[in-house]
Image 1 (cartoon, rainbow over the protein chains, first blue to last red):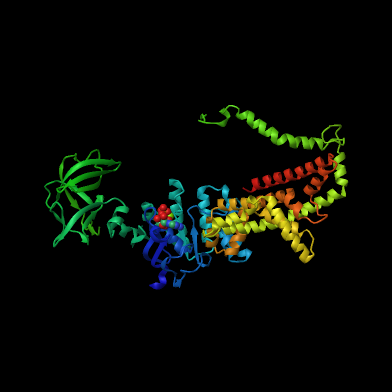
Image 2 (spheres, each protein chain N blue to C red):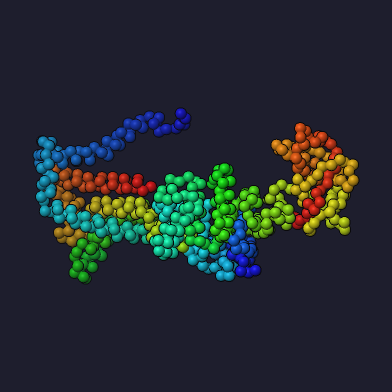
Length: 351
Length: 267
Ligand SMILES: Nc1ncnc2c1ncn2[C@@H]1O[C@H](COP(=O)(O)OP(=O)(O)OP(=O)(O)O)[C@@H](O)[C@H]1O
Ligand SMILES: [Mg+2]
């Protein structure tokens, strides 16, 4: 299995500053990114995503721990000797060079023959559909075009790993959606391992093969988008990805006991039960096995409706359901209702 | 149109003062240039329009000699100062902050702070002993002295440019397999070029203009244009001095214009 790994981080710690003022940007991060996968680092601002990327690129050295590319320890290798390229958030295109010269820059630095450089550059420009703009100055390009140049420039030397630090955050929504598709296509066509940074969970869920969720310098969970969504390991991951309900429970033989006394089946372990709003069914109050609840509020979202409820012990619970045609499903604030959870959807997690 | 809350144009007397300052700045220069075309021998009484004093200056061997010397010194000194200033600017902006950085800035800018006459006397004394010891009396002393006091003038614009340049460009170059030298050669240097040109030009003009240090350091027969003119003023003053000054002015304006046009195109 080891040969399938493109990037390994081994107990990586990165601190900035000294003494009391020191900031621990990365706290014992270990991860293995597979060859050819679209791997996304997801987390809120300041959680250390950029720092981890810069360590892989070689712009920073870890305070402790190791970085491996394939089987090679590159912890102390300078960036120009790592087979890794970066697409910078600000693009960082060279303003004194044309589009073509930007794309050919890495090959020129590697001392490749001119014929090879021009062939590869043309191939890259075709890949990102920028042939017509090859001789423009980069300052004359739109944001989306600059983005493509940055991609072509980073892909030209055929790196083992491509690092992308929030490359889409400067684009407007429409262009962003286009580039998401484009990036995915480029990744599949080139087969290069992509390590992509974003704080947009939807972007992460739609594009990635696997996601690493970070918070506070720690890698909380690494899993497929589906698993991250359906089986978050802790409260942070569950809360950060999509909407969810948290209910305090105590473990008993039959399952988990809610504060209001009912016992529900739940997988996983921990003292908190989590259930996605769309997995909560609102039923008649007298239905067998239903948990008693009272409707507090109804909120409409076009085709969907959110039902805000309180359980017997006052815990809040939200259900999301498709809006019944032409109505409110016969619900009104103050109604006593019953609640059931979709089979296997309730999970126990750590605080 | 939005009404600006405050503009200096509303201050009473502001326009008058501004006009007054411009008159004071430019009237002497205009007078100088006008009288350089005076056909008579007086620098104060206008007679007729003529190029007489330009041709006198052109035919004057001493003027030619001083001009060539001035240009040789200014070109060499500004070249040396610019190279050193570029390294100094890189050393003070392109590395992690270190202890004593402020002290280094002060050291580099020493010629801006120490009175010129003090440096001149100091150089006179040290060069005098070197001259005795080595027997060398050439232009080297002047070039060395000019290089030294030109360094801060070259340093300041280069450093300003480097500080304004985002280091992400150099990071990107390193990411794209450029070695430290390649990064400097293909990214830092081309992006820095306008700053280097500005520094070199400033150093050139400062060197061309210098009187005090040159007067103290020069050996016999090593007059530059400014020291030659100063010598002339002590004797008979003719509009020849106006003609030479006007030519010097034209050269400076031409340099400035060329630089302005060049940098405007680049950015
Ligand atoms: N060069 C530095 N010096 C000091 N502290 C730093 C440095 N770089 C990062 N940090 C700190 O490390 C932490 C992580 O920063 P990082 O840039 O990795 O966050 P991020 O996840 O990329 O955030 P964002 O989404 O805002 O880009 C932050 O607290 C930041 O202030
Ligand atoms: Mg970041």
